[in-house]
Amino acid sequence: MQRDVSSRIVLDITEPADLIFAIAAADQYEPSQEIFTATLDGTSLDWHVVSDAHGTRLHRVSTGTGRLIAEYSATVTGQAQPLPATESDLLVYTRPSRYAESDALGPTAWAEFQGINDPAELLASVSSWVGTRLQYVSGSSLPTDGATRTLLARQGVCRDYVHLSVALLRGLNIPARMTSAYAPGLTPMDFHAVAEAWIGDAWRVVDATTLAPRSTLVRIATGRDAADTAFLTVASGRADLVELTVTATADALPDDDITQLVSLT
Image (cartoon, rainbow, N blue to C red; front, side, top):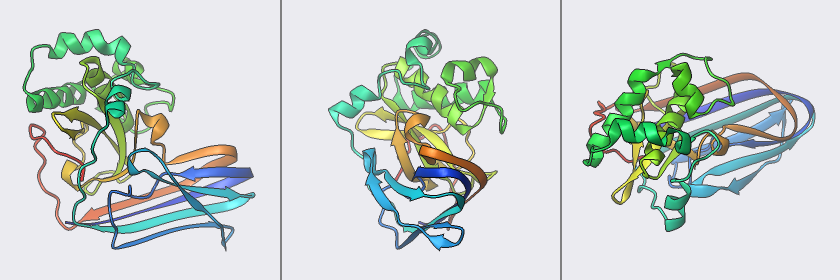
């Protein structure tokens, strides 16, 4: 399978800034071609890569004021091996986190899913439960919304679906985490987010939005929730988002059956 991915972020920098971009394919892949560039008013900027958890690659750029454009493109051919998990990973991803309040939603998880012992059936049940209780509405949630508020609002975008899925899974004592990804087939096209649950001996993808085939996703960043996976972090200074363009295509878009266990490769 060949997947071509790209992103273009345009920012107005009104105060000198330290920016961290999480837009590159994770290092589990070996792209046949890959380019990252950052320019300020047409002049190239220096940048360096910071390695983060689970192969996440962060591009860090220090810049003065002006119009900044960051662009990334890559061609990923074939599939990578699924990521392993350490004992520490499984502990971290069973705990509540900033946007996935599994301690608050644990009783709901047990009431809804207790007694489902088959792993594939359990993940499909959580995916369907979240997908049927939320309505996908662009711009409907705040950046500070977590799983509890999402459930009360009954609407959100992909990150909100993920936070609720992760909180419910952790409430069942199943390690779960959030992954940002390029998603061929996604409509409308954007960066996408999915959940991963540790079942047996592998991370399995849960996408309650069902907006893109799970087998075509290209991992970008992985962590506890949106706090660890944002495509842009302004570490200092000020940057206002002007434009965001994302593309992701694959030479084939397979059907996706949520009752099947799928790993992100």
